[in-house]
Every structure is written in structure tokens, then in C-alpha cells.
Image (cartoon, rainbow over the protein chains, first blue to last red):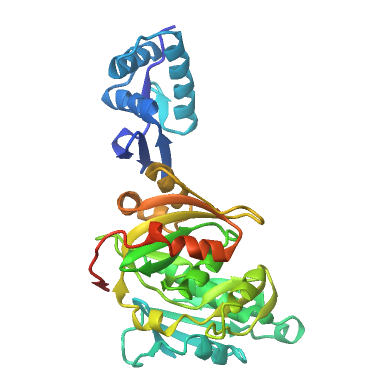
Length: 95
Length: 294
């Protein structure tokens, strides 16, 4: 079974505002507002570039943050995907 | 009775005994306008007719043909009148971003106090209004979606339960209207806004500070900076029409927060809070020119 591809649900309707290390995202599609820390915001930016598998997401984020794609980052990305999906921001590409 | 309230013209109508007198007292300093002038909102508070009025009388507040509150008891006419006006403005004045916040001003800078019901917002607002600050509103912050300045909407300050006694103790210059007992929020009364705040209602203010307020009995006063992003999240939950305005609401909120210093404040003692806000930390933030209302 191929890896799931993840993409932002309302990509064209997301409006972002950054203040220091935090980013606030307004989803005009749902009307919801979300708060991202620095790392999560980089994750969001990675997904704004293209849809990604979880492995690609880890590698893209590692590259953006200039860190190793180690087990800790894998676990972080797994949790981030769950949180973004629960927040209605993320869906699989075949949805 | 057509009256100008901040940027709005309103026509009041009631058939409830005593309400007109109470409104005259609380709005004594407001401008009565010409019947021929354009009226923004027509608001009425009427006693319901029919047989029921003899059994269990109730009243209804209607603004622009839309029910704001219905079937509330006759002993709560004045609180529901004021809550009805709030709801009317929050519903119809969509050219502002409307935050659930008390707003006061000094040296042209607005201090916006955000908090849920029971947070001590109106108590602190009244305390500061009678100690050197100008009242813009005790309930609704009207943020321009164009330049993000705050439009004044000085109206009577709603006080509940113990806070009423605390504010009355500030002195005889605090003019209180009739007291309503047994409302959904307990005992409620209104304080007449200072004449100076009514006279200067056309002076807008530049956003200066956001204070996210929490009242905790016996707590030491504690002021802590909060990040602007976290402030946006909390204020968004306390905005009446943030969702309705959509992207414009988000952009207005983030831009107004961006110009402000933001804090969490926990307090229990009004005198301590007044001293805090009259201290150096909340002195002039920016040299600003006063803005005439648009």
C-alpha cells in the first residue's frame, strides 16, 4: 500500500499572520483560527509548497529547520499530522 | 425619542411604566436629535399584550424589526434594554470589528479590557472611568476595519451584584440608575457615563493596550505580558462579529493587536488595579493626535 499523501484542505483560503516565533492562521473555509509555534509553522509552510507523504514531510521539515530527520522528528511530524487533521486543516490527497 | 449614541442614531420607544424615566436619567447628557434626521436603529421595549399580560406579564426588545430578547420579566426592563442595545449594535454595525471589551482612553491611547462575564471587566472599567480615564464603552470595542482606531460608544456602565456597591463607594459623583433585582445575572444597575465622556464621544482613540482580565477573589494583582499571537486567539473568542467579517475581521484583529502591548491581568482589589493603570506602565504609549469620528 503506497504511503498516504497529505495536503492542506483549504490551502487557497488560509491567511497567515506571524508575530515573533508564533503564527496565527485563519481558515476562511471553516472560519477557524489556529495558533502555530515556530516549528509547526514551518510544517505548515512545507505543506503549502506541495502535498507530502509523512516521510517527505519529515525530510522537508528537517531541511527547513536545518536539523537531522531523526526518530524524534518522525514522532513530532506524526503528532503534527494528527493535530492538523483533527483541526480540519489537513486531508489525504485521495479525500 | 431619537438619541445620538456614539456614531449611531437611535430611536427609542417603550410602553413600560418607569422605563422612559430611567432612560432619561441614565442618558441625561446625550443629544436628542431631530425627528427628521436619519435613524440608524429603531429599538423598542414593549410589554406584551393579550391575556397573558394579566397572568404573567413579560416584555420584548425589538431592534429593526428583529427580536433581540423576548419574554423576560417586567422587573428586568432596564438591564434588558441595555443588553438589547448591545445586541442590536453587535448585530447590525458590521462596518466595525466589534470586540466584547471595555474601552477607556487616556492621552489618545485606548486601553481595551477583554474578559468573559464575571471577569470584573465593567468594575475595572467603571473604577478607571472615575479615576482619570475617559469612557469609550464598558461592553463593545468598535474597531474601524479601515484604520483600526477605536470609536467611542459611551453609554451607561452595567454593574452587577457586589461591583455595584464597590463603584458607588467611589463618591457622590457616581450617578446610579434604578436597581433591578433577580435578573438572570443577579442584581443589576447602571451608572450614568460621565458628562465629559459623552461630550467627547466624537474623539476616537488609537489602540494602545489589550488587557486579558481575570478576577480571582483574594488573588494578588498580577500583570504578565502575553504574546500577540496568543492575544489574537483569546480576543477572537471575545469578538461578536469576527466570524461574520471573515478575512477582513482576521486582518483587522491582527493589525490592531500588532500595535498594542498585550497583558494578562489577574486581580481582586479595585484600588490596586486603579493604581496599576495610573502608574508609569500605562502612561502615554504613543504621541497621537485625537481622531474625529468618521
